[in-house]
Length: 114
Length: 111
Picture 1 (tube, each protein chain N blue to C red):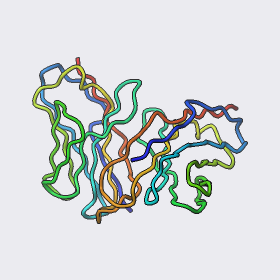
Picture 2 (cartoon, chains in turn blue, brown):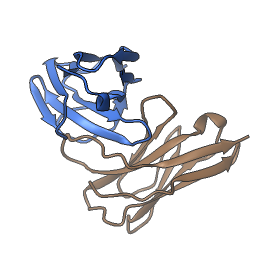
Picture 3 (cartoon, rainbow over the protein chains, first blue to last red):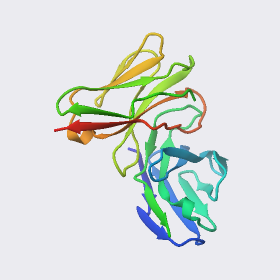
């Protein structure tokens, strides 16, 4: 069966520090991968998605970047965190082949920038 | 993706059927209706999806009107663990873009 791992579960970082959140998927190949953010009291917002290694699409301009160095690994990064980067970050995957199918989400990382 | 309209909140008694409505009057012919839910502080969970026909799985039933402009998610015997925010989303069959979440319906199951 397929599983998605996302870590860490919680993170407190000072303003201006770098960020690296990692997500890995097991039990499938060539998945579509996604990063979402949910700010406090707000809805889920798609940040990035990837249909293959090295292929990243950004949905909104922001202080973050994403990379996909391996087929089942998706990384969310920032060089210098802002207070506004605080939120609940979720990684998700869906089956590829350019078809929209159901997405499966990780348990999320709660990031607090202080 | 087409926009959806859902009531912001609903209450349902434990053991009763919970019926969550969703309006999607601008849905296109190639767009599916998906339902997800998010329990507090967890990642969203896929529930069910459909195109035209009614669908049922171990979690819920999805009823889509004949004109496809609205749908209803039915949780047949709601439990306290079904308390969550429920999202109705329409999306095209082809393409790998992500989900566009609205504000959803906060379903509260009362004991």
